Image 1 (cartoon, helix red, strand yellow):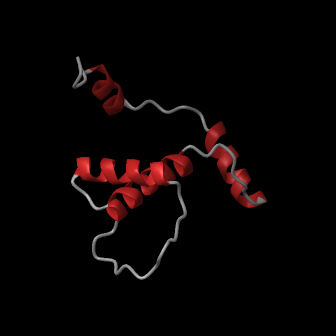
Image 2: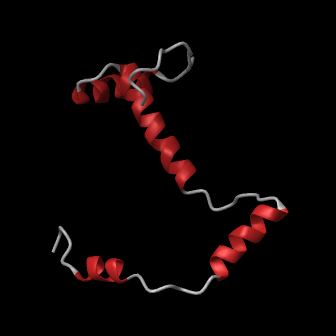
Length: 91
């Protein structure tokens, strides 16, 4: 969430008492205001939703460029091969 950006927009929500209580408890546990908690959780969900999109539309020129990139022969990448051969942080 951009910190320097001025907050000028408002989102109004209606919810049940139990949902509101749950959000209050979760925000308190996270040491945040309910607004901070809801915005952070919403932006996290939005980013995941947008990152996981599998359908997109391209015009003819963009589609041809995309298809050409996919069809391009694989090039050897020695530095990448070396990196992947090294133990990971969880190994």
